[in-house]
Length: 306
Ligand code: UD1
Image (tube, rainbow, N blue to C red; front, side, top):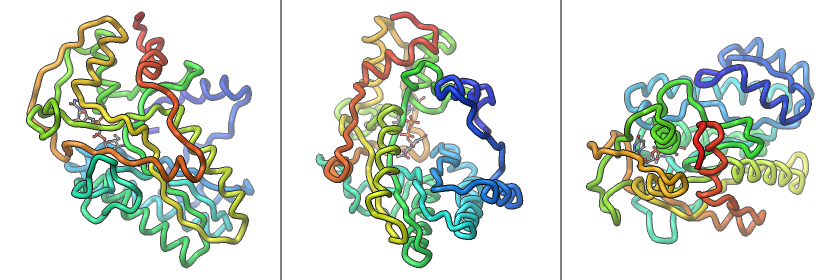
């Protein structure tokens, strides 16, 4: 709840048609965690909790290690104690060492030994820990490496709306488009890319949700008591530059979006994109939502008319 509001729960209730059980539990609170595991006979865990800003992690490394790693260990210990072995983990493309970058994008076997910032390191370390838990404690692990998840749920009830000024690209562009902010700073125009700005792969959150549901069902195919550790890239394979991102929003909205070039941001890489073929081949997962559709989905929240 550190970057959201409890009112989100009401919107989730509207989508589901019932109010899901909710516990505002801090993972540091082992006692409360155990009470929750005691109360339910959980089938598995989907672990999204974590701080996620590469830039911020450069300034607050220990906080990232503590929050993302130490408290996850409590969760894993609790899972083992209560015999809950299935886990889907939100990893990140930030774990790849980009030396292996080539036009086909990084696949799951690419080097992961050289992360660029503490945030990436926390994801890498947790993947290694989960790998050991699969080998020695019979955990069933699926780790998704995704990159820049963007936008809103198609119900128009859930959207990315950080409680402070956003540090991710698309939420920031939308705040400029809606007039809340005057302009966007483009961090670096001297990268070795076609227009000098950073290249990324932006994936719609609805595609990601579909991926999580499909892979959860995949657990059923491997059966109980079979340890597994599977890693998948969830990517669109349609990477764009910062300038192209700004232009896309501008074209959909028929609106100029002001930007200024600034220095490169600490921890940023020139380009990162992955190869999602493994997800396609094994579960027939591909991204479906186009960037223009994603942009349109989110207009409502930003009170912008196109
Ligand atoms: C990073 C992680 C990604 C993680 C995401 C979550 C890496 C390589 N990637 O993405 O795995 O899921 O954070 O937060 O570590 N930009 C601007 N101006 C802005 C904001 C961003 O120019 O105001 C540029 C950045 O320099 C970058 C691109 O836009 O080139 C995307 O930045 P951002 O949306 O913050 O995500 P990443 O840092 O790429």
